[in-house]
Amino acid sequence: MPRQRTISSNSASQVCAAGTLRRATRAVARMYDSRLARVGLTTTQFSILRALGQHGMPVPLSRLADEQVFERTSLYRALEPLQRDGLVMLDGQEGRRAKTATLTARGRRLVARALPHWREAQAEFLGHVGKPAWARLSAQLISIVGFAK
Image 1 (cartoon, rainbow, N blue to C red):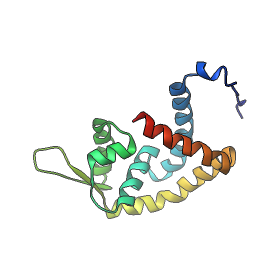
Image 2: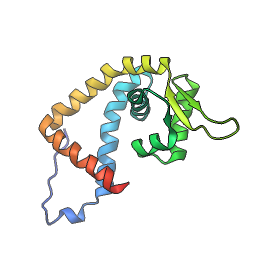
Image 3: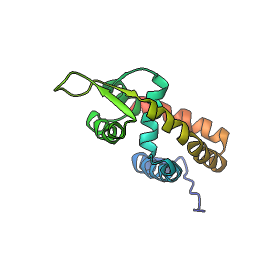
């Protein structure tokens, strides 16, 4: 297990928030990806599919991009394999970019199959970090997402 590093409030201003958050995100995503790979998904794909499933109706791509904190072009690239695999249906006017995304029945079934693997990763993460610490940190991160948009 890697040694935990603590920083004082005086030195906190010298630690790059972007770099530290990016490294933490990659490390956590790697662990979730290893579990979700069992059903052929990445963490990003699972997040998109789950978000679409929670909406339960066609979602404007601009709204989905905002919710998932994606640039629209990045979201379009992420949706391509999901559409190709029949997990997502994109609708829009012919000859123009798609305007909405909907989770298909096949997508719902895959999310259901992926959930136990996600729960396994979540339990491992919470076992390491602790539920109270995660509750505090997740609230802070949600606030950061809102601030940094």
